[in-house]
Length: 520
Image (cartoon, rainbow, N blue to C red; front, side, top):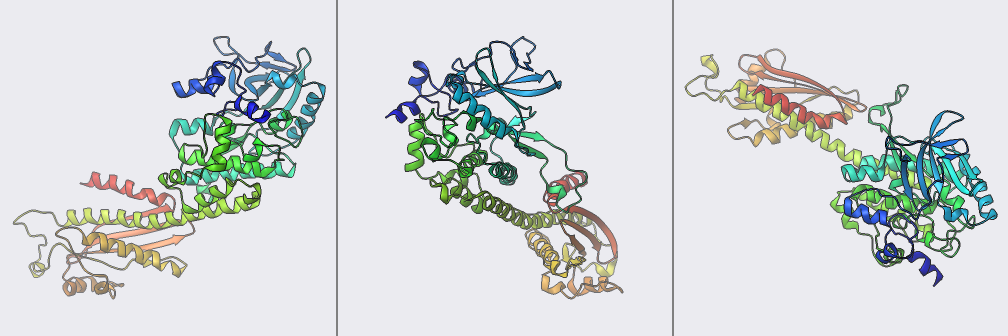
């Protein structure tokens, strides 16, 4: 009964403790109620402590132009401000812990400092560094000085741009997993992993990185903030129970074991990461409710809304991984190493699909160019011969032969790529009205047109134009040369060369479409 009473007095959105009155009656804190009404409006929450002054030891909270304290954010554990370390003259993020935690006595404050020292020892490129934990002597106010991360939270990104694509989400997940792995080695659990505690920071590619996949690597760094703060605030070092100091975390992203007296480890953070990835991909949380009890009931009684992932076209491997991350039993969830492997497999599945799409996209672009060239070669004007020579007037002017594309790759097994382009061209050109395309079998023997064989082909197959091409594929790049020739005069009508990465080749179609429009 005590657990139920405590859980009902916490906002299910952000975990803020609800005071008696209007907020508790509605089941959410005023900030979250206002956010729903005004789409993200930030208003002060009087249930959280505010600083008596703008100084805490060597830290001075900065003020905005209007004189107000420069608030960066707030949640269940306190308010975070932009501040200056007056000793080192550097900006920091200064979190003032909710005064409720400071009232728990000397033992609680001693534990706070002990856990804080462990958190401060954690160093990782994807974790915002903790510089200092302290307690203001005048009033026992606990505070934490951290690395100031300039950027936007994942929650802000999704609100601003909508759900993220699968590859971006996987890259973010890999970075967070790396951070969790480093924390696990030191026995640290975040306990409040959520989109609002994950910052995106723009970063330029590594100039010293010469690896083949350099162009495809992420240019955004993820920073996990508030690492170790929740652990420092729980009443028992290994407990997160409702009857032991109150719930710490954000209910909508918390693991089932965080609502009980069960011990938590990295698998709790993996559950929270799964809920976070779900939100990034769909814009929704997997389990929701107006109160903590409703969220807990949803976790245990409702099935995951997989239709949300299907609507977002999330790949099957990624769906399966998310389901395993959100398993009720911690033992059923993947460990950090297994999670990283699964993320890599999900990425490979998407990239393999992209390779197929890129091949067809490239072929479609070449078809478009071929169509334009044919139109330019054979203008539709009545009573005007297309070819001046009398001995070729009997050749149908809109007959075209697409010769086998030559595979110039060092790896001869890439011949399927060249053959695939020819097949796609033949199929697409055959659908064009008034254009006759010679079948693949008929042109199979015409790979070499040297020694005047082009005119022989024109006579034998009855075509007015011939399309030739070559493909060279190396690692993650593809080079395509293509040319259209007047078969009767052997005059080159049009040619072009395309050098693209496999990733960029998917955008080639749009580029060529613009060129076609200009040509027409």
